[in-house]
Image 1 (cartoon, helix red, strand yellow):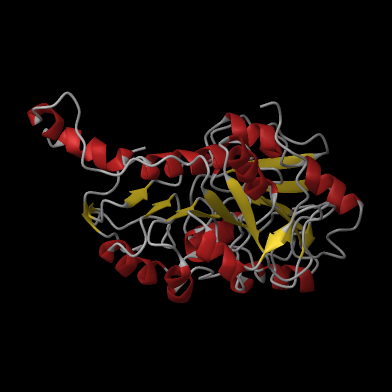
Image 2 (spheres, rainbow, N blue to C red):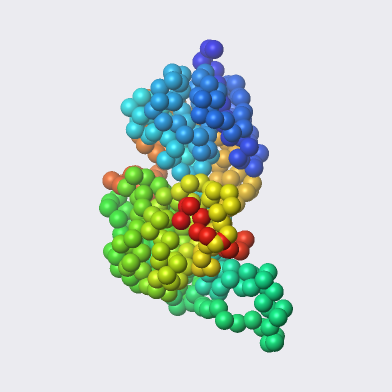
Length: 357
């Protein structure tokens, strides 16, 4: 195939519920739904531009794609791409910036409110008929706590972390951002991470998954948290050592956890019936559907490749989005300046702790 015209291959098209408009520059366009590793490599054999979501593109696969110049991700996470191999071999990589900047913070607060007010537990009580059997007009027995006046500790001060902070201040909460190695987003006051863990009533994670951030919250960090604290993860499952989390949840050494992501992508079938009542597990729905993806720029996946290729990003690539105002710190964490918000689930598992915990 001649590559004077770009050949764009869009994998996992079925994972994007949005109208995708092709780019304006000359190209051929092929779409596939989810494929296995060997099928994906074959589908990308002639591609100059690959559009992917969760497809794993490691060195073994990338080395078989001699024409590839650009990888455009339809999500924020880049841990499925071997960025170092791409940098060494002239392949530019870009993710979606300002992605789900409203839906994820709102989803984090849905989990916070549900756990602080025992909504998951009360939903189970109603399903079991306990309210119907109560002699009182109401059913009590579970803690119902306000969030006004409480402290939220946020790991990650990018657009999502600061979106959560904006909502938290609206609820009358004190906000702490956990410090980390430079560079840092300007204008943010940072607090040592151990102090954040010790003072926060709610710890909310909004960092990308990198080798440096994997198991960011482990046994030691969980031991620093208050017994009344909640752990909220609407980022990536690998940020938390989920095995280390199981014992504190069962023993009540922390008050609860709200997760929208698991390190295994999904819990295994039939393993979600005996989890602790302090666990709220949601099926990776924080990013929303349809509209938020389109507003984030996913409706024009080819325009950024065109700009990046024109400016030489493919010849002089760097890990992370080319031509982006964000910076990547020594931990590999991308720091994007926050420009402020625009004008502004299912019951917990009722069975044993799923394998992702």
